[in-house]
Image 1 (spheres, rainbow, N blue to C red):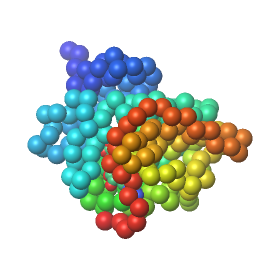
Image 2 (cartoon, protein in one colour; image 1 turned 135 degrees about the horizontal axis):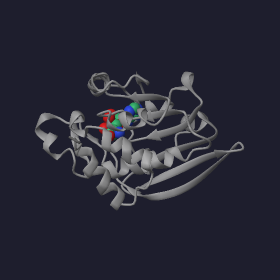
Image 3 (cartoon, rainbow, N blue to C red; image 1 turned 60 degrees about the horizontal axis):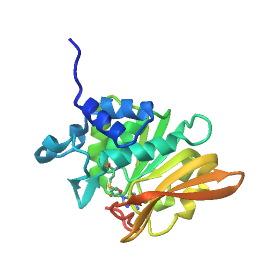
Length: 211
Ligand code: SAH
């Protein structure tokens, strides 16, 4: 008997929303989003909405996870390494782990990082390195990276992250305060080329003390 995964319906919905990269749709279909949610919200796992995960943070909307991942895969020739800032629940991290050789993920709230780590083990995803730290600074010792994704809104483009992009690499980041835009920044021949993708709404990329 064919097993029907609940993620299949979500992937179908995202296709209707304009996501066309089959690799991304397959990863969405294969990833149990309820694993990343508190018990009280698991029944909403396959809705196309952001949801609270505690500590004032949210799991991103599946559409935006898929959109950002699709853009990242367009970086240069077959991007292999990706740096993620804002692990949160780990849902985006799990999607990236299925599409990149190696994922590096930085989170400033220790308890969220701890839970995310346990989820990765439960899902048998082992190509992920996690760090408790301030994502504004990136993770320079492991870089430069083919792709960088930031899942919290920065007030301006973080210079350290741009410096950790390989030539041919791509950074996807929401920038702004009240009004936020998703930016796609390409590093081409020593220059940064920025395009605006669409309006978005993310929790802020916090500067300063770790929790
Ligand atoms: N992709 C995640 C989104 C989580 S929300 C998911 O789908 O679950 C954004 C995350 O960014 C939060 O967990 C927040 O704690 C983290 N964050 C905010 N500022 C940060 C910083 N300066 N460094 C690292 N992580 C940060």
